[in-house]
Length: 179
Picture (spheres, rainbow, N blue to C red):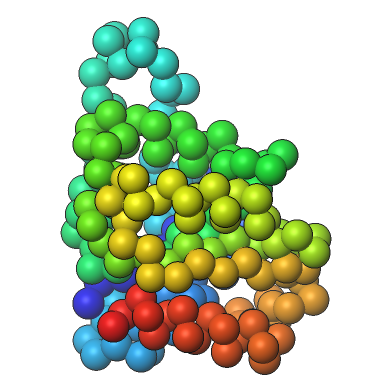
């Protein structure tokens, strides 16, 4: 099983990348012969999407490569950062370009959607938007979960959730992802 994980964030120190990595490795530990590929969406930086740019550029190679990465996975873990209550510009741009290749961006893959933030909201607004729209883009959403107050609930030294209730909830979501 190949598990593709990434943060919908361009931050090099992304707490969402830490959460996605943790969840994906939990899934790999529970599944037989599983491997994790952790993507950095900074490796897929392309010009801002517009119809004019699309006419000029066609479909950027990096958007095609991102679509192919999704296609090669057996399961996907995404953790969303929240900027002003919505997706980060970096993720939204990559997603917009990729959806022009094929609206079924997630290609029917089992998907676990996560979000976290330093505050008590846990990026819940963007997670709700992602969870609501993902099926329209061919994601088989197996679970979604917000981790509030990241630094109080995640041990950055061990790379694990330190809140046992949240850890149990994530394990249950991960089991759904790989079943």
